[in-house]
Picture 1: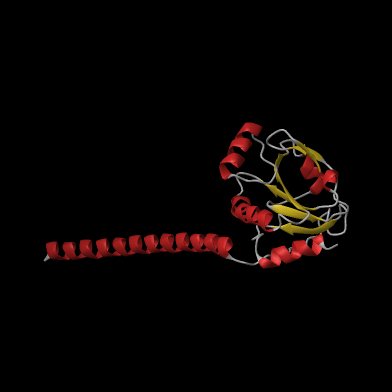
Picture 2: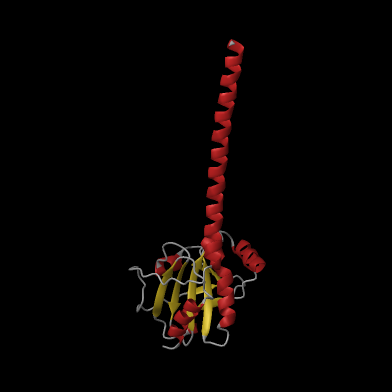
Length: 199
């Protein structure tokens, strides 16, 4: 009888352990699915959010001029792009939302190829230029990828979180300041940029 009771206790204990393991496994599975759903929602969502912030420079401010080299050594001065709308995007290779929005930036560039529009993507990576060049070329970005390893450009634009983007109109005035990853090739984003192009 004692042996039978001991076996029953052992069976009950094993059953409880299995239930706890199944619950933990299920919880981890649900968490993983939620993370994946959020990621794919961001990639597929057609929405575009113009985030209003009080940081400077903001809408209506003169965009600070700067000169930075791209990954091929060519210098780009913001004021040289007067007469064009500039999408100035702050990003980094280690930033997931930055990398998620970049294919839509590439698509946007193609959709607005006949407009007076340019994208300047400023990497704030601290690594060497060769690593950034290798990364950008592997991704096949066709817009200029600039590099600001010393952080001087961040002092001018105060991007805070990344990605942060600035739409700068043809006169060099900030049309909008947009925080967070976006779906740049959706209709709302294109209409927003066309609003700057029509100014």
